[in-house]
Image 1 (tube, rainbow, N blue to C red):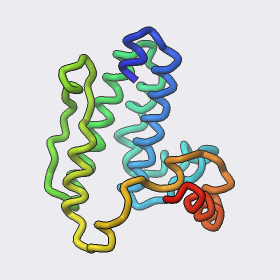
Image 2: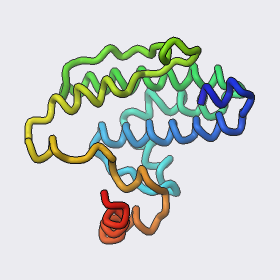
Image 3: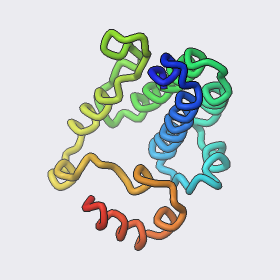
Length: 162
């Protein structure tokens, strides 16, 4: 998002912001063990989560910001809130919930790899440890057909060899 903004690709920066906001909303659903419906109902479902009390305004601010720096500031606030919520779950060792520079570049990031590392370390079932880190079917597309049908989702996953 920041790199697109830095090279004056404001449309690209806005598009990436939307994707990041969507991913954060999905993470809130996971943290609260709630189903994240397909996009048509996703905003409504998000508003019903406890996290929305803290995050709705800041996510809207990210979407409404007129500059990439404004979007980055709002996204950073949201990332830190999500990191604190992760720590409050108590399922992993605590992780520093503050954003940091991206490899000395002028962009602030949460460093999501840190959360992946402690999450994988907390997995005790060897069968779960061996699973791929590719994620779920909704990370590969927003089409209603596979997202609303387990059978179709499995077909798509098989086609993608997931």
